[in-house]
Image 1 (cartoon, rainbow, N blue to C red):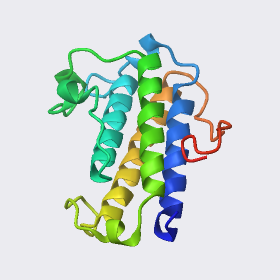
Image 2 (image 1 turned 180 degrees about the horizontal axis):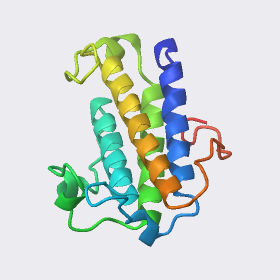
Image 3 (image 1 turned 90 degrees about the vertical axis):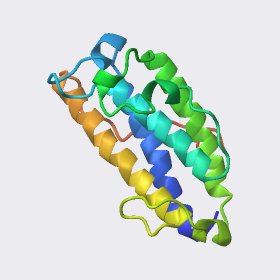
Amino acid sequence: MHPAVTSLAAILRLNTELLLNCLDDLDDEAAQHRGTPTTNNIAFLVTHLIDSRHFMAELLGAPRPSPFSPAIARARCLDDVPELPSLTELADRWEAISAHVAVHVERLDTAQLARAARALPGSDGTLLGNLAFLAQHESYHLGQIALLRRQLGLPAMSYTLRPREPGRLGA
């Protein structure tokens, strides 16, 4: 793995696990709960993060069509989305795209990391800068999901990492 992405890959793996940990003890009804009428729910935020990981795969040159893009492509909030997937489907989709991204992040070389990419906030316009922004973006939304969990009366999100087979989700 390129030294420039070692920490980034670790953050992406941690975020993969933290999102799954946020879903522990949740059911579909709880995932649809809105703290206030204008607050997004956990299901919407997870759907958004899955879509963002698909965008990351696209930036890595290894696109996979997001199963949720048509439903949330222009959505800015939950009110813009008619129906959200079940937690089981969300967890499965999250693990699948996360494993795909992990493999491709580990294969990056110096030239790929330096290539021009999108002008994302806080990014230097390179692929590495874009990946760093997207990792921060995930972390931001994970904090929202963790807070929504607590508002539902559930325990705080755990930092426990699940055992993984070598090569699975960046293990």
